[in-house]
Amino acid sequence: MKKITLLLIAVFVLSAANLYAQQRVSRDVLGQLLHQMYFDYVPENEFNQVFQNFMKTNYPGQNIFYPNDVREITSSFMFSFMDNEAVMDKWTKYAKAREAEQQAKKDEAARQETARQEVARQEAIRQEAARQEAAWQEVLRKKNTNTLSIKDKNAAIDYYNSGVDYFNKRDYDSAIVKFTESIRINPYEADVYECRGSAYLFKGNFAQARADANKALQLDPNYKAAKDLDAEIKRLEQSRTAQEPSPPRGKIKKFLIVEMPEPANAAKPQNAEYTDTKVSIPYKIEGGAAWNWQIFSPSIPNDVPQDIYNRLWNINQKTIKAGKYDFNAFNYNTAQSIVYDESALSDNYTFSGVCMNYADYFIFVLKHDSVLLELYNKGIITENTSSTHKWIEYRTEKNRYIIDPTWCDWDYVGQPYGIYANNAEFAEACRTSYNRNNLIEAKSKSWFFRNVKTVTEEFDRRSHGM
Image (tube, rainbow, N blue to C red; front, side, top):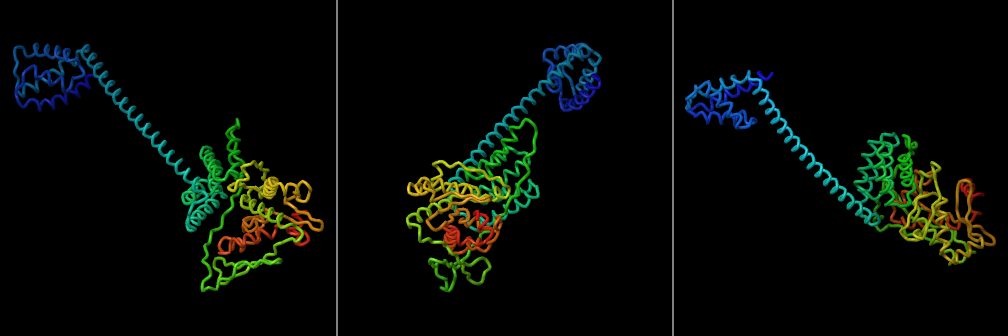
């Protein structure tokens, strides 16, 4: 094997010797060239000793050599020590040591490059995390003041709805893609983060699921679905045995927002006409050629002091503003009580829940009004429950009035996809009509101080324990 190796070296030496044999050279120069080009791994003194011994033995007294001499000397030198095992072994060890040294340098250079790339990668990750955190803080700062166009909001809703389709089919990869696109366009909706986090959970990506749950809760600290997601992640992480997530709950689609212009040709109907018996409000929804009128019959009791009525109305409006009805909690019977603290009195406070949470919040705020608290303690204002519902009542000497903040919330009663999908047109009217605020207020008053004597529908009566 050693002989074969040296034969191969000899071929290169002989071919290269032609380059240095174009002019005459001295014995010392020839030795230096051979050492530098092919035997530099051998200590120079040791090589010179072997080479000079070779020259004294084979070319005694000759110091100048010509081209043909160089080729002959090179070939003879290579073959002269091929059978010298001592030299072969020693020089082979030198060659291997040089090879190991060069390989070590390459490995060290590769290690340093890998380390450099890792440092660069970590720095890129840090910068990206900082960028994302800054962008997220900007989202939180603008969540209540963002100026997204209706076009962008609808584009985000389209992606969200597509994501819901995939999620409900358990195609979580595609759902994540769609939810991410929705968030890219409109990063202010807590429910989209919760949906994407749920999809990540079923993919087994707890880190991303937790991140999305946290973002949803930062946008809406009382969002029940996000709290459930966070609890499910913790349950799975703390389990000592591998477990599957709880069965997925179906997600609910959203409806697009329609921006309607005000009526043209100065023929705009008048605003709401309030009377003691009814409210008539004009509205027009997408695709409608004609204007319609929504007629409500709000109850305005004549045996309730106006000041008390106004105080309760303000609390009712505050409850509706704060509350976001949780259809998932209702449909899957997972609703839980919410403990309200002093922060719940803030105008910016929000919660996600069902009828009991609406009623509890109403009473919580009421108890901070000394006048109403006295009526509550006397049993004039009461909390009431049936097997499926919770509401408030106000009792006079002759009448019982229902105050139902849940059913006053147009976003709950009017949604076409809710459990009470009975007023899709009204929901669209609330979204699109220039008379939106009047529609919502009138609808709210339909179940504010509603005299029990006027409740005739079987479903309404059963829900309110009649």
